[in-house]
Length: 113
Length: 113
Figure 1 (cartoon, each protein chain N blue to C red):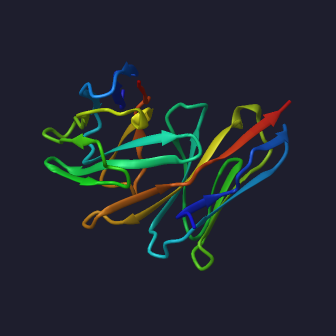
Figure 2 (cartoon, helix red, strand yellow):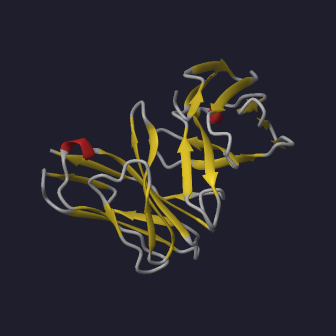
């Protein structure tokens, strides 16, 4: 089993749709969780951090369920500019210990006019 | 402008010819890391550095070397490149470790023939 797994996609949705991405991780010691966005072979950029209490940034909502080792990203009112690959990222380790970061394979989203 | 720079952006080389990809950040970040991205495999960590003179292996370190003599620079060295090192390489930095937002360079597309 891969350490971080994501919905394989691709997701093709019309403008204005709501779309949800799922991510599961296998290491229960994981400490920090993120969603990054990557446009067509460009560098990944942070979309949002994910907290146990859940967090929202405009049209984007992220949730973390530690018990189920599950992370989600919800995009409401999809825009053409949301078309990208979304990477689930999990960090294991801390500042004084070894560092391990695992990127999921990514889920591709295409928003269609 | 806060940024991570990589050079070269594109490189075609032959098997066995030593090469160095440079990475520099101007944000005074302690943590720097190298990744490679291959289709279907996502981003995988090659090496990371928690601070000057402190480096450690990531998941795929074979065939690579790094050094961290100055805080801002973290070059990736391929002593004897092979075709299986053909990939898209990203350098990233973060204030302390990968549990914080990572800022990525624009990427280096390397082809080894």
